Length: 300
Image 1: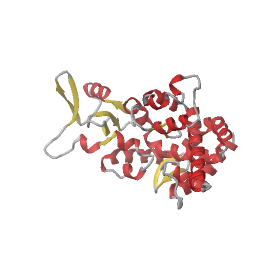
Image 2: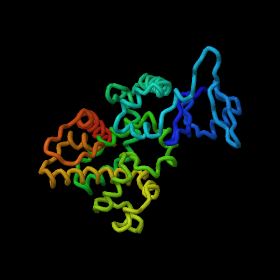
Image 3: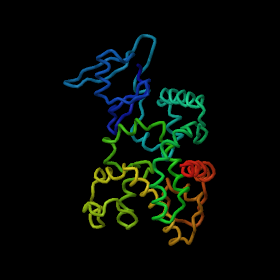
Image 4: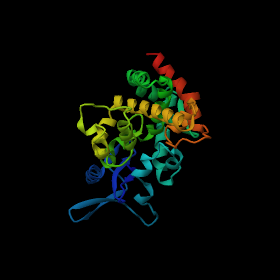
């Protein structure tokens, strides 16, 4: 195996490595694999009681693992700016491998889905991920009086954007739960969930005193994280986000948001103003992802 990507924490320490087998390994697991001779082109350097992975550097190469490393923040911000990560030079070895994987999926007959001109996922992956959420989507749509297919389209958008990074971000959970990150299939930020609970839109557990209106502001993000990663809660928080956004724009600037605007604003969180404009993301959600979601749900 060869290392094709490193993930560094906020202190610059590499905490995960991705090998060309497509799997993410912790720094400790990678050290063990290097000791077993299973990873090419690297060796171990020991400092005190800790061992670190370093690239072999011969006379004719300047290869360095830093050239394959991106930060945790760059990965978890992909929901807002997918192009930044896929065009990052340090990400290219992993991206090339992932594109080859998608090409193989396409040869099996599935249609690929592009974001900003880059293939990110496949229709079959979306179908497999979205279908089990059917009950939650329609339950949330009924509770918050929103279009279930719009909620489904927004979920498709999030599923597609995070498809290349699923295993990586799953492994990073313990390193990001104390940050205000987007969580779960609906990619709702932890602080947004706190605001929704405080405003009375949705509480995933009325019997939990840590989630009541008086306590929620001081509840640690890591505590709420465990609720947000639950698929049902995530979908309901997504629905609550839409409802709160529609209510806010109507109350503050008297604007009834169109589906394209809801799709555009879902990930942006802009304060209400008089001249909202739908972006390409919102248009793709309505024109491509809503029909895809409808096909998945109606076919069940």
